[in-house]
Image (cartoon, rainbow, N blue to C red; front, side, top):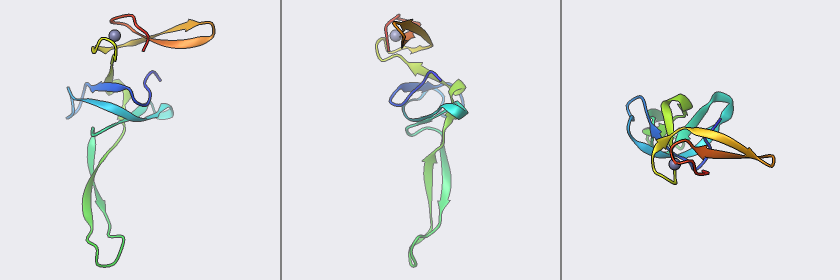
Length: 101
Ligand SMILES: [Zn+2]
């Protein structure tokens, strides 16, 4: 799982293709991430109190990481990541500009 919370990603497939958003949550087990404002699904919400109307709300559902690309905060390009391990620490390196991200 190369993506994590607070990364900015570019959506590369589906109806949000070409849009950018921030990762709100990562789900490594499912290889999915929740991206702010992306992949919205309508959901019917039942009234919680009597007298309240049920409503349709839009919620983001997680997207598969194969449908996004990371935007490098250093060079601003959609990029892939490689890892560098130095003294037991793992760093993410942008393949486009070679900087640590
Ligand atoms: Zn870069």
